[in-house]
Image 1 (tube, rainbow, N blue to C red):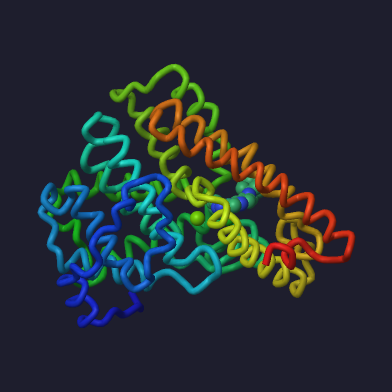
Image 2 (cartoon, rainbow, N blue to C red):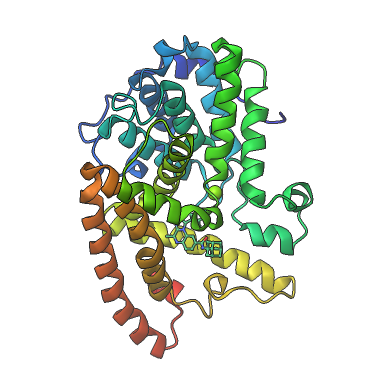
Length: 344
Ligand SMILES: Cc1nc2ccc(C(=O)N[C@]34C[C@H]5C[C@H](C[C@H](C5)C3)C4)cc2n2c(-c3ccccc3Cl)nnc12
Ligand SMILES: [Mg+2]
């Protein structure tokens, strides 16, 4: 693995005790993006320990510290799909494990819980800020590797995760017995693949049935579908925070989308509307995304875990904010302003 992390940073992280955990850190309303970038590795280590995995699986703190720093280094400096996105997604996994007591209430085994947290942390490693369809369109190396199976980027994120685990001094799972080790990698693989939104639409109906008819913990398909639901919720968890956060995240996402659109234009390709800074109507697109995708997923989560009902209210409030914003965006469009200019 060509990346490198300084052993000084590893030593500092092993000794890190600096930030006391913020009192609201365990609440669904907490916004993990407010954590100072340089303190995030320490928070990941603290979440990992707080979830009991270090003791349960006899994990060496130094090896885990090195793994976390390699994962962080594996993310690129793109507007949205960067380390802070991974950190916020892992924080949401931490919130679900703690607030829903997924292990205590037998929804997840300890191994599944650890795989869930790790998959969230690693689910977008080495993202280039471009979509799966762009990989195909541009005949990227990743497309040549994975396009026959689909979920091109997600397969690359899995591959990068395995590369880091196989890097000297990073395999914190080495203390697991052979069966747990291969089961954990299999779980991480399926959980990361589940973050391809196109895949989510394929199993949404099964999730609806599970959420309405009841969860059967002994049914392996239910365990798989629940893991997929929890991955998608974590990936979209920015949408369950207050409006200021939601608006700021939209700026980051559209910065990425429009950069891809600009690239496609340079390549002589016609970008999709949501990627075209001249054509995209951000409020309209976000209203469709929130009403047709985000709120449906979190309603399923609320069916299974009533404690997450508060997030439905937050998403509804964000929808109202986008409805109000739409009026302003449409007025500014008449003055010739693009919606990205209005959003910024
Ligand atoms: C706020 C917000 N808006 C978003 C608007 C749109 C899309 C999006 O990928 N749409 C689709 C629409 C159809 C069917 C599939 C495949 C493609 C064609 C593209 C999905 C994602 C959005 N998204 C994400 C997000 C979640 C997972 C992966 C990547 C991203 Cl960017 N996280 N936050 C947001
Ligand atoms: Mg992704």
